[in-house]
Image (cartoon, rainbow, N blue to C red; front, side, top):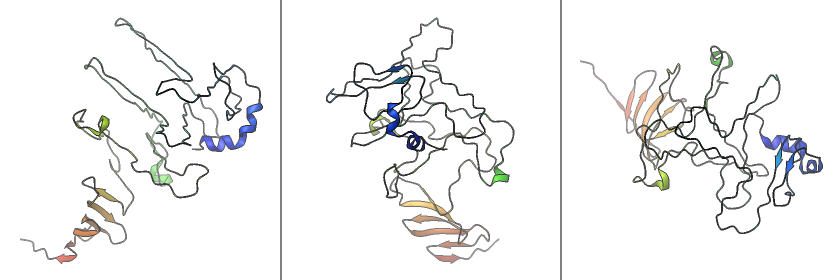
Amino acid sequence: MKRIPGVLAVWGLAGAAIAQVNYFQGITPRPADVYGFPASLTVTRSAPAGGAGTLVPALYTHVTTSPATASLEWANLTVLNNYSDQGSNVAVYGQANKRGTGATWGGVFEAQDINGTGPLWGVEIDAFANGASRFAQTGGGERIGLGVVLGRARETIPKATIDYGIWVLPDGLSDSNADVNFGVMVSAQCRYACFAMRGGNKLAWEESAQITSKFDPETGMWGLYNGDKPVFEVNASTGEMRINGRAVKVEFQ
């Protein structure tokens, strides 16, 4: 999907001079680096120095229900009806540009269960499609429920390494705060596999990644490893087995 940096390259900072309808700058001056999108509504804030951890949102939506509320109250609703055959159109897009050393999040969803009973979802992602996928015809999937895209930040050259693609952790990394019944649960029928990874990659069985297993597509061997040393291997085609690199003779009774 074409991401915001490509769009910004078209408009550039020079576009900030374009007149914008329904522009609100609040009580702070208009930022010098605001982009000149022809937006229906633009809200800006230039955060001054200081603040000592005070939360100051540029845009704030607040909804409160009563115990008798029967309507569906959504604090924010964004709808995109896309009839276009071109482009990469998005209903909601958030971007955080980290230029300092402070911790930065592209997005956060938080659900607090004060009552302690009833359903609670931190995030729900719905992917509803029409008919069977074209996985076999295209040689890959094009319908994705959740995609994690890795890359280099713009204006940077070195290859980027992300530490964790997905991380499930208790608050403050403290087991006394929370635990989980199932780290990952797949209740749907998986046509090909419920988990798949690129051949040659390892699956670690503890957090140091010392004890691992992997399938080597070049040799056809699946193995259990201690570091880079194969402890146990089996050929996925012939069934040949090796222990510590030595072939194992199997006698059938």
